[in-house]
Image (cartoon, rainbow, N blue to C red; front, side, top):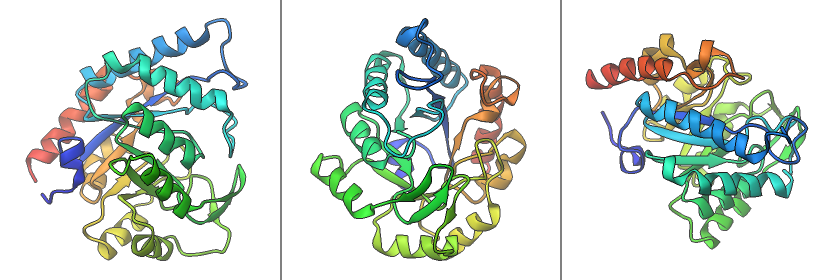
Length: 272
């Protein structure tokens, strides 16, 4: 098994990164004002414990329930995430990353100030989707990371945002090749159509063939039944829905589902 930065940062190749989906935050329409931030914190603690006790390799913090998403998240969203990640530090026992959905600048700033070691997002290109037109500026993001003395924060580039299309009709593989050459990516992530949907294996295979040394990550739809198929190509996966109770997106993480998944993944890794 080849060695990438995943070994140094997470401690293993073929890494499983479990999502800590933060509940709706202050300012979000679905925020539970009665339960307040204490409820968001307590639910995050429960998910962290379930993931870690189940044997997960790493965590990813995301404001997943900030529906509907914003191109420019409100300041209270980022402030709440920073507060929560600081308060959660005593509970975190594995490496972790973070992202503010649809905001690369906020994601990089959040990582630089909370100790998160990687982030993910749409860092280049112009895409049409549910948020309207998303115009990413890779040069600004990489310079921000450098100016914050956070060059150690890995940037995992989404090849195509979920539920979106390149406005110029560029082929995803060709645009990834261009990004590989010019944008200093630390990895590429490939999603399915939406959360929990199967990843595009044809695109993943094309990426692997064209850039054999690049870190590739499956960002949706990885489950117990697809471990061998997916991890035979990718170096890591972001995993959320399949680790939740009954495999339902809105539910809390199920420790036994995590343990079952990780037992099979560890067996797969041992045979490489």
